[in-house]
Image (cartoon, rainbow, N blue to C red; front, side, top):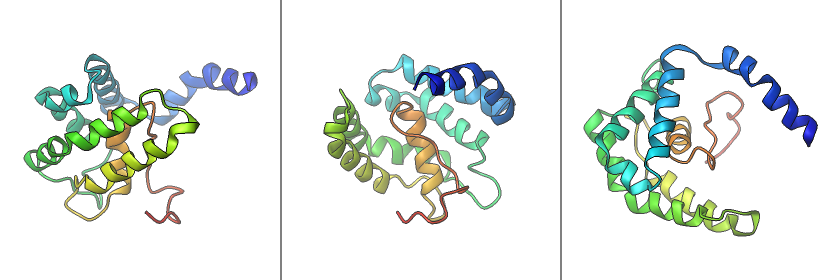
Length: 153
């Protein structure tokens, strides 16, 4: 385990140079900073600045290019804020997260995932996983279509 941790911490700078830079890197760190400044998910979602930055971060992460088309900002904001109770359910379930209570976390995340409608198309995997990552960065990894084509949601 120490060897894996050493590789991760020793090569993080290399990963950052290969993975993302420029605007997407800036927006990513900005949204994570805002999330830390708003420890309550309800406060985060109530902030116009946080929602705007979340929207901008998703755009910079290619969620409005190629085949992906995000909803207009007002619809995006309304969907997030309209699901504040579902976000709070995840927050409560994840408090003190352990493998022993993972069922409650998975159930709350599944319910929230199903309610998020952020795209003009019916696609949810990429947009929802990225959104959930930005809101719950230590709980949810971002995903893309690479390597997930066989997953049924």
